Image 1 (cartoon, rainbow, N blue to C red):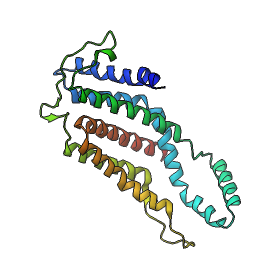
Image 2: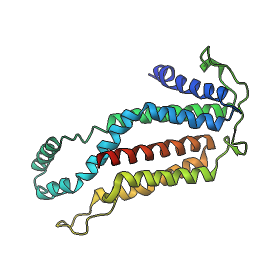
Image 3: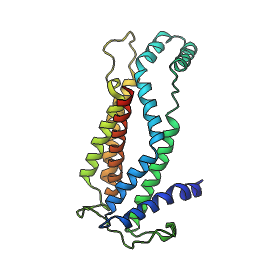
Image 4: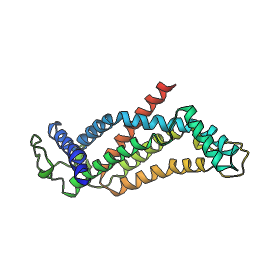
Length: 240
């Protein structure tokens, strides 16, 4: 399994990054990371589109789902059956967003390993992972725009990545972040609680990673998030 991951995911990303670094005027590794990120996100558009649409649909159906849960709160079997019928009527699968998410996580892990391995190697290319048609550039210039050192954590990039993550998460959650003003149940709204935690936990984790690992990873995360924000805006606009 690890060999398949290395051959079919890690190496193509590794070579794409080095190839772009070779052909970019000025050989800016940060620009190469940005272009690789945009190319990867473009490749994954069909999967991320399915995931975003599924998440948004489920968020829109939350009030009706809560109403069904409340209606059958004393009969768990009936509650489950009612929810299954509801999913069927609305033509939605609560698990439909899982596979696209898993695939994107696999590619995220791959690009993470590419960037981290290059950083740990002192920005020296591993020739064993290079394709024959990709030239070894020698020592890589690890400065982005000539002044941002991609080998060290960068708090500005980490902060911008966290802000982008917060905005993207808020777009998905929408009004569901706020609990209903009135409810017939004295039970806490666990969905709203989890949504609020996600809204702040994800950006916090993003900032922590950006402030801990080399700035090259924050640069990838920032432009990956910006791409997702643009894609979400487009999907929501088309849906309206």
